[in-house]
Length: 186
View 1 (cartoon, helix red, strand yellow):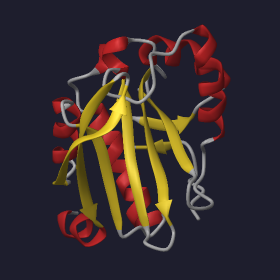
View 2 (spheres, helix red, strand yellow):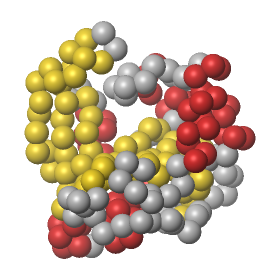
View 3 (cartoon, helix red, strand yellow):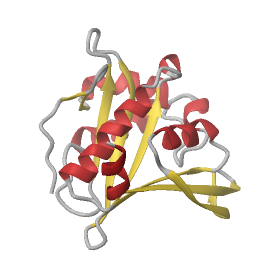
């Protein structure tokens, strides 16, 4: 079980729980087709963002396998939300997790997502005691692949047309990192 003491601070960021006051900014960046192009969900509109923000607000701890920790990535001086990161506890028996993220396009190219995702890897390995954490993505999403590579994750699989997403068959790439690799790189 992991109940992090929020907010978390990295060198340049504050990772905090979402609040209902974040509805407009989440609608802004997750409502853009270029942000959700390679995600399972369609761009959020006024109707779909409400249940989404309700889920995000509740995702503050990993108490059991299947739980998701999802945090707003913010700038400490202004509080501006630059994206979000998540860690899913996928298996207790096998001590596995999965990371994910989305960035506001106005704040990409600065390493914020990599920095925030690194903090979630730390929580997963050092806080929850996971053995392995994966990152799964649409294989066309080269920007996301570069984030995972900067985190030290290795590409383990390229699954051909394994999912039917948004009306088309898509390839999936799978990256992973083991706890011993995480510790060796620290």
